[in-house]
Amino acid sequence: MSRPEVGELLAQREGGRTINDWFKERFGLTACNYREVAQALAGYAGRFNPDAPHPTHLWLDLDAFCKCFPGEDQAVARLVQLATTTPEAVKAAAKFEYSSFSAVLFDSNDLLLLRPLLQVGRRHLVTSFDGIFGKFVRGLPYLAMAAAEQAGLSGNALQAVRAPVGYIFEGYAAWLASERFRSSPVKVIKNYRIKAEHLPKDHTDPERDLLLILGEIGFCVEVKAKVPPRSLRATGDLHMVAELLEGLSRQAVTAADALTKGSCYTADGTHIPRLRKAYPTVLVFDHFPARFPLSDAFEAALEDHLQRSLFRDGPDIGPLQVFDIDSYEDWDKAYRLPEEANLLFDALKGRASAPWLRYESLTELRKQKDGIQPSWSSIMDKLCDESEALLCRTNK
Image (tube, rainbow, N blue to C red; front, side, top):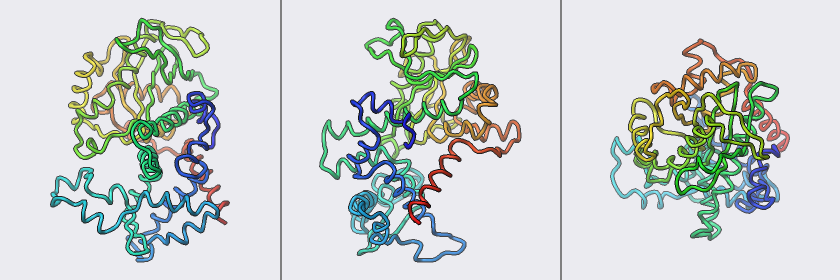
């Protein structure tokens, strides 16, 4: 979020609105301050060491924590409140006796999965490090909705809250691609367009998100901050996953169709040469749950929704594949980029074409194939080091 390019799409779509504007509106904090608070909370929650347990590490001293952010303490307290519940509320929400089955699924009645800080009197028990990290880092779209509800928004205004998260996420995905393939033969094309005759019936938006081209091979990546509703997280129903990705997948495969017919052009009107083969690709924000062999049910349901073959390797259209943010950020952990761009493209083609590999991490696939344990720093590693250094300087 500290890179100006990440916020370009948000500014284009919302009249010059910046990432800081959105964070201030939603959380009362700048993007930088929000990051500091989220990192500090995650660090606070991660203090507990089961090999050397100490009871004080289970408790968040909220007053002391808020004082670490002078001038922002009230906004920080409101933010923390979004992750806070009480023993009485937890008891009231537990409407049935838990079974071994419900224990492995998201249970919307378990408030501690939604609010991992348990307020006991004036003290706050940290019930889960993963819960804190998920709430304030990975759960930003959900948190934005919760903050809007806290502020009294409802109806269409509430539903519109997530749109800026999508623009920021798309901007981040495009920025990350540009950084990875800088000074390489890979062409990174953002916000390209397809000719109207290749649009699906009743669809009028010709814009597509991100295109990566190496030689005559392209990966057309459709990016959305898709997050599963609670009903889906409660059941793990892969048919509901297919429904969630239907529109996004249609955009990806129609882009692949058009690219192999030479019917696409860049945002400035430059024609994109016809590709010999295109691989439709979907990138979502939240963890993607499908894994082989259960992914068969998801794939069958998605093909049924779109009424076309999506996962068969054809001569000009490759199988559709899905990445979530974690597996997308793995690309330059698995391959040294841009030097190994050719190897990465080969791995992406192989991942798409094999059903048993299609939902696996590229890092794990490379370990299995080449026995290579990455020793280089990825862009994510560098960003994390930069963020940690900033947090340390800020809180000295």
